Image (cartoon, rainbow, N blue to C red):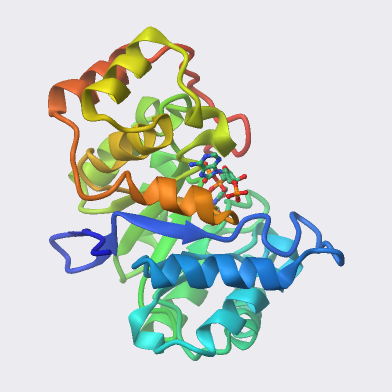
Length: 289
Ligand SMILES: NC(=O)c1ccc[n+]([C@@H]2O[C@H](COP(=O)([O-])OP(=O)(O)OC[C@H]3O[C@@H](n4cnc5c(N)ncnc54)[C@H](OP(=O)(O)O)[C@@H]3O)[C@@H](O)[C@H]2O)c1
């Protein structure tokens, strides 16, 4: 299927919906018993269905998620994929970051990344070191775009002062329940400064895939969509916002694709923004810092 893209004034663009790899091959540590073939199949199914944005990180399964993505890339034209990875907070010193990028490229079997994120800030390491290494990689076109993840608005502003390349995106925990990105001003900052906000955890690990509240059920019914589809559409209906889901099951992929190709009315975006019950204003997983 065709997946719409959002384009920034600076020229950077991303599809409104992409596939993540968190929990593929393990979590924070590698799971030796993981069914790798199933994860590879899930990623292939996502690409076959028309998704092109793949998101991974050196931290995921200690690099094993990147190896799985690398397997998938072997049978694809590299230029058809928008490939994103992330450097973890322990590796934000200049030389460590360069090594991390090299290792990610090796595991992924490619010579460039479309998007490279600082996964999380590390207050122990001066940001100038991190961003001078990113500057070098971007100058060499080894990374085509620089981005940050789990950064506060203030930290994004500081980071942008340290690098000549535009920081094109910010990944944050953002969904109908978790609103830190909006409450802290990161969403507004992205919208006002021509940056993409890439919302992670759009269905809150499945919690948003069941209705049960009068308002949410009413909006789902109005569009004839499931809760997961409505939760994802609420995100992508917002300016500068795109999202990523992990879909190791084909049923979840099929359902989530139903979030695309339509757009809820702005009045319903606003209604859900204001009145969705049980909102939380700090991430329970990775608060912005
Ligand atoms: N930058 C960061 O710090 C950060 C943090 C977290 C995530 N991320 C990125 O964002 C991606 C998405 O985040 P996430 O995995 O935490 O969030 P998510 O997509 O909201 O949650 C994924 C979980 O929900 C399930 N799911 C997906 N669609 C469903 C549906 N329609 N019905 C029922 N269950 C469904 C998945 O099951 P199955 O897998 O079994 O299908 C999986 O267990 C990650 O893969 C990762 O690439 C980035």
